[in-house]
Amino acid sequence: MGHPPADACVADRLAVAARHVREARVDDVRAEVEAARAAAGGALGRDDAVLAGVLLATAYLNVDRLAEASRELATVQPLLPDTPPLRQARYHAIAGSVAHGLGNEARAISELIWALALVDENQPATEELARVLGNCSGVLARTQLFTLGVDAGERAMQAAIACGIPAGLFQFRAGAANLAWAIRLEHLRLPKDAQEKWQAAAGQLSASLTWGDDMLTPLCVARTHAYLGLAAARLGDPVEARRQLATVRTIEITEPTEHGEVGSLLTHLEGATLLAEGRADAAVRMLAPSWPEVRDQHQPPWTEDVAFLLARAAEATHNNRDALRWYGEVHKRYGQAEYEVALARAAAARLAVDREALVRRSRQLESDRRSDPLTGVANRRALDEELRERVPGTSPAAGPTTLIVVDVDHFKRINDECGHLTGDEVLLRVARLLRQQVRDGDLCARFGGDEFVLLLTATLAEAGDAAARLSAAVAGYEWATLAPGLSVTVTCGLAQSTAAHTPATLFAAADADLLAAKRARHRRSVSATASG
Image 1 (tube, rainbow, N blue to C red):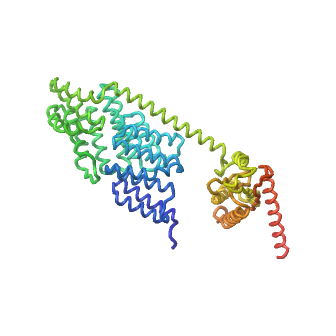
Image 2: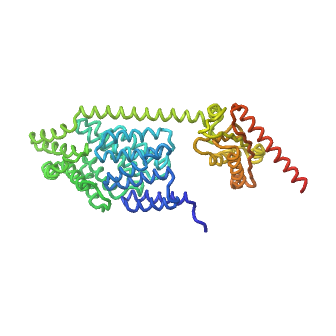
Image 3: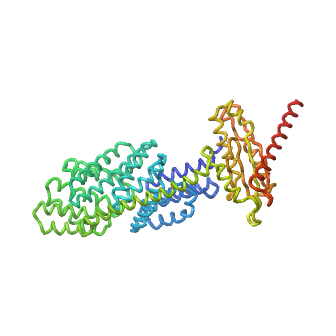
């Protein structure tokens, strides 16, 4: 048996690396990336190189090695401009997570705005889209841009469902964003709004566990049950809160965690559950010893929520002095004014997302204006503009210009015998073969119907070699896989630009050469038939 193609080996290696990322196995991620490089002959293509850098950065991020994550992103950042928008969005989403981890909130928000601007509402649903939106959701919630965070989380969930992958992880992130929002609303004494968010969070978190999603790691499952318990306690169901607390304690967590995260979360949930059970004194005894460590963690609104629960417990025991002290801890960190500022920031961020998306759409429309909708190569308008730019005359430093007209032989017969859909696919594949002969600075265009044009920075002899390679590539292509018995050939006509040429006369010269080549081919065909 033969070996699989290099591209398939690279894709398989990077897919395995992605699974290791979810398991926080950094060394294994790096080993698979190196194996992918080896399969590609030592250097990955741009898209794969950016993906490899993002996977390595995500792996380092998951184990809190932020400097190394930042270094991996910096390595592939120069490759971004020539990669697809979705790959760029994935880079910016992880860059936002890393910046947030490093305490640079302004940079984090800027990166996330870029990511969201690159994935507009018309983006086809894929797993990569779901991952981008899911990553954005988590960090936006932690930067307290709750409206954007919840919206991104819900879009991630919908994308996952639409493309047929388990949506548990993405539903968890949407639920976690709603949960953080509910906590903040409760701190601001907006109970009706808070209750609505608690209920939304509980519904999404419960649903996330029904997917059988292998992306939900033990740590993620533990968080889900802890968050469900916290929601139950705040919604006045201490029995459910206690049940969820017991479930969390049975989960064996193997991934590395930050700041004793699970222990802190269990303490937090235990205190909320005790308060919901009416055991305020026990809640104080549980939560107060954790405050010296919690208060130094910048994890809004979670940090303030411990102080908020202590204030509620002090109120329940009529200890007004302590209640005021604890409420003071909450509001000196985050009050109504700050919440309104955060809402304004979220609105401004949404406007920035829309503005960046509009700029990108404008560029896309300009590209569409110059592109052939069937084949994706340049269209007649783009060809005319390029001809006016380069003909007549080309500076010696730029090199000579040669125009090649390429005609698909007997194309009407292909349409008549195989159908127009097959004819369209023939044109699409011929265009793909043509693009392989085009270097930076050259142009490949569809002139109309079954006729294409190459505008090359090359001498007539060099362009002749390119035309010969193209003709051989088309003739040797396995067209029978498209339609039984199908074969396709092309004929080329060439003309090199001189100072005397205009765009029209240069094209006419190449067209005349094409006609001569077709007549010569016809004479050879007739002669061969007569001889036979």
